[in-house]
Amino acid sequence: MSNIYNFKVKTIDGSETTLEKYKGQVLLIVNTASKCGFTSQYKGLEDLFKKYQDKGFQVLAFPCNQFGAQEPGDEKEIQSFCSLTYDVSFPLFAKIDVNGDEAAPLYNFLKSNVKGLLGSETIKWNFTKFLVDSTGKPIKRYAPQTKPEDIEKDIIELLN
Image (cartoon, rainbow, N blue to C red; front, top):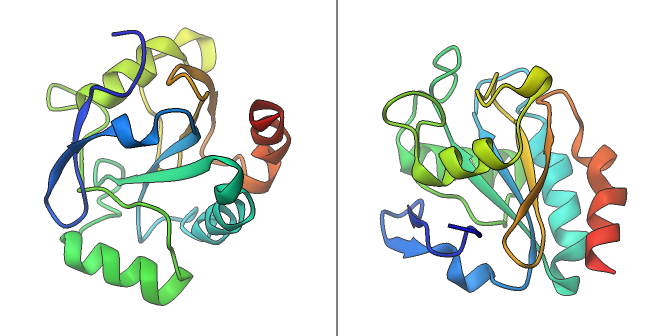
């Protein structure tokens, strides 16, 4: 595959869909967790989403429990936490694996197209972020400690 649009994913409510509806938009795809030291990044992600959604930008959050068991809840608990704690309005998807034999095909695609530190494909921790251009091509990976606001200039560049 040359873009992300045909990958099947499950929404937070369990419906199966593809990423086709995001065609033509700039995306920031993030593996998230509710009990992580980086969880407060939800606020920055929401701020970016609200600021640029009308210009063709989306944040897509994929909860993951592979790092320190920091996403132990089910989808209803995750959705409730995100809504009540951070007023998240961007799309949340069902919990997935991002590494290993059970890794979501979308994440295998992202990792193989935009490698991490020293050429590694492995996701190191929660809140690793992938910036995807409006053609569905992954173009940049950001480390978990990279704050959402530090990605803003790259988003603006792709939106222009």
